[in-house]
Image (cartoon, rainbow, N blue to C red; front, side, top):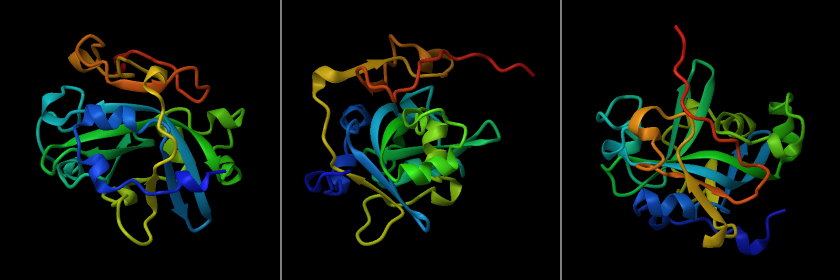
Amino acid sequence: MIAPSDRTPLPREFFDRPVLEVAPDLLGRILVRTTPDGPIAVRLTEVEAYDGENDPGSHAYRGRTARNAVMFGPPGHVYVYFTYGMWHCMNLVCGPEGRAAGVLLRAGEIVEGAELARTRRRSTRNDKELAKGPARLATALAVDRSLDGTDACATGDTPIRVLTGTPVPADRVCNGPRTGVAGDGGNGDLHPWRFWIADDPTVSPYRPHTPRRR
């Protein structure tokens, strides 16, 4: 259950900051996905920061395209991409408009709507794995490209909203290299931009980049 004090929506100003400030500050926040079948809420436990044209790991590193256009828009919007021909992943855009920074939502704890999430993640062994990884999180929340560009800070009804939740104390926030990112973007000395809650069982395991065989 979500406590009444945790239900205040995050304002756009929260996202209108540098990505390396927003990313760790999203830990412990609650994302609510409202669907025709009912709402699902996930407490965020793992994220990754991507800093646009300054970041070789970012989809926006080489500039604006039709695919990544939302990243260049106002903060507080949802950027959804399709990967490996089968999975969707969800990001929250941050920083000033035109800056193309975003936070990939990697994992979380389902705190409301677990029964509905289970119907979308039938292969999971337990509830801790329902949103353990970015593709699993998106699947559990029924996120696809139709939600790309959604304003998570809009007033009134919106299919995705981020609530204040309970921020995580700094001494419980860990950071390290981003999962599966190639080249300099995956170098933990240069870009230790994966953030997670220490000892949380819903956090996904780290895996380095492995080149795909043709």
